Image (cartoon, rainbow, N blue to C red; front, side, top):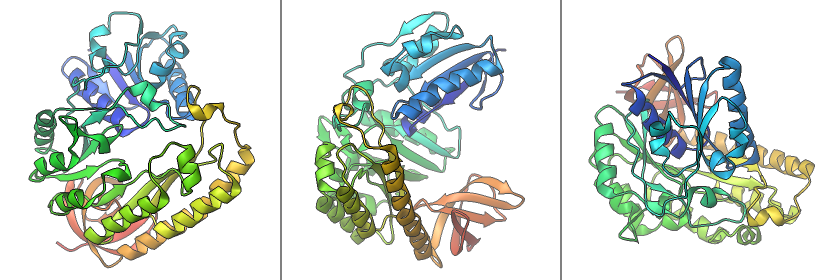
Length: 415
C-alpha cells in the first residue's frame, strides 16, 4: 500500500481542507500528517505573507530531501497566486489552486497546471471527520473586504456561504467523537443564509450539540445585542472572541480599508464584557503599515492599553504584489522591528494580567496531550492554556486555576 503524506501551511481553513483530504484517502492509502518518508505528498500552501509563501516553497525542498522520487501535489493560496514557483520542480506532478481543491484526488494520474477559475458558489467538496481532539468545520469561503494590504480575496474569491443543513450534519457527526468544534472560514462574520447575515442562526442550530462550539477570527461588525443574546444563552459556546483589529489608529485603519473606527471597536468589546464574565478578547495587529507614522503607532499602543487584550498576535507588514498597499513606499525594517519590540512589551504584560484574573476561578478544560510524565495540557473555554496532573487526553475536566505556569495556568481538578 502506498503512503500519502498530507501537509498543511497556514490558516484553520487550510487545516480543515487537509483533514478532509486525509480522511478521504484512509481506505486506499496509508496516511500521515507528519513530514516523513512517503510515496505521495499533498501540500496545502499559504500566501498570506511573503514569508508564508517562502515556507511553502521550502516545504517542497524538505520533501525532496526525504524522498527524491516523491510524487508531489501542490494546492492552496500560494499555488493560486503563482503556480510556476512549484511547477519548476520535477517531483511536482500537478498544481491546484483553491478552486476544486477537494477534487485533487481525481487528478493523481495527471500532470500539469490545474489552477481553475475561482467559483462564485460555495464548493461543498470537503467533509472532514475528527482527526484530533478539536475538530474544524468550514462554514464559509472567500472575502469581500479587500483590505488594502491583503491578497486573500484575490486567491479565495468572493464571500460565499455553506448550506446550513450541510454544516449541521457535519457538526452533528463530528460531535459524536469530538469534544470541541471550531467554526472556521475566511470571513466567518459574513456567513449568510439567503444573502442575509445568519451567523447567529447557525450558532443557535448548533446549541444543543454535546460538544463545545468555538468561533475563529471575527470582524467587529458581527457584535451586537441580538448576536450576543444568542451566544450567551448557549450552554456550549466558548467565550473567546478573536476580533481582528490590525491597527489602533483611525487614520491607519482608513488607509487599510478597514470599515470601523477604534471607538466602534472599543464599544463592541465593552458590549461583549457586559454579556460574559472575563471573556478572552484576542486580536491581530499589523506593525509597520507603509503609511503608519510614529505618532500613528503610539495611538495603537495607547489603544491596546485601553482595550486590555488577553492575547495579541502581531506581525510585521508584508507587501503582497497586486494589493493597493504594495504600491506604497515601504517603511525601514529597523523601524518596524523597534515598533514590534515596544508592542511585545505591552502585550506580554497584558497576557500575564489576564492570566492573573483567571486565578482561583473554575473552568472546563479540554485535555489534549501529555507533555511530560503525568502532566497534561489543554485549553479552557476562554482559551487559556491549562496544565493539569492526573488527567487523560480527550476529556473535559472541571478545574480551578491555582497559579501562573509557563504560558498558562496550573490547575487542580475539582470535579
